[in-house]
Structures are given as structure tokens and as C-alpha cells.
Length: 127
Image 1 (cartoon, helix red, strand yellow):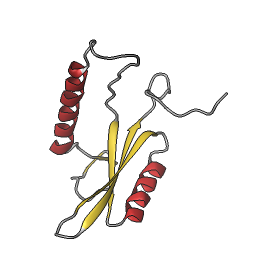
Image 2 (cartoon, rainbow, N blue to C red; image 1 turned 180 degrees about the vertical axis):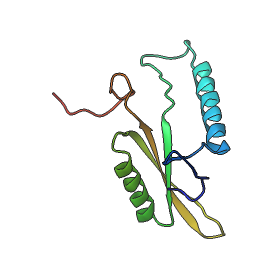
Image 3 (cartoon, helix red, strand yellow; image 1 turned 90 degrees about the vertical axis):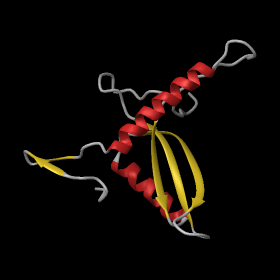
Image 4 (cartoon, rainbow, N blue to C red; image 1 turned 60 degrees about the vertical axis):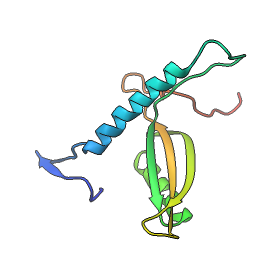
């Protein structure tokens, strides 16, 4: 459990309220997705389709490439129902000059509560 989030105990269960940063990120992501949809023009395209998806982004950070990948693997073990759709890798400036940190960003989705199916594209073996 993250030490950055406040913890409230109610009826023997742990409840973690969504911090304002998460709510702001969601509003920003929906705004960005809407802008991406508006940017799709019917004219000027030849063959192919464009789809806009708002997947959940899980960002795992480490002081080394190996540590960032270990964090991503640990998250996947804790969320076995998650379907990873894509992975992005970045080496970004750290907390002081000449120090870098590594980020693995996973675009994930979870099964639909009613159907149990994942939304979006997933990889399937040839039949």
C-alpha cells in the first residue's frame, strides 16, 4: 500500500479515497480523448480507421531499468485480472542533475463487470 495515500478504516475494511491528483488526471485524460476525437477528420485519409481509447495508465518508476521493470511485474502480479495493451519505456531526469529515473507505463484495461470480457485489442494466437 502506498504511503502517499491517506488511509481510513471503516467496518474493518480499508478505504482509500481518491486523491485530487487522480481525479484531475481522469478529467484531463477525458478532455484529451475528446480533443483526439474532434481532431479526426473524414477528409484527407486514405484507407484505414482511427480509434481513440482511454485506457488506464499505470506508471512504474525505478532508479534503474531493472527496478522499473520489477515494479511493473509486481503490479501485474497484484492485478491478475488486468490486460496489458501496450507498454512505453522512458528514461527521464531525476531529482537532481545527472541522475535519471526509469519509467515503464502500462496501458491496461480490466474485464467488464457484466460480460467478463476485456475491452480493446488484445493479442491472440493464430487459429
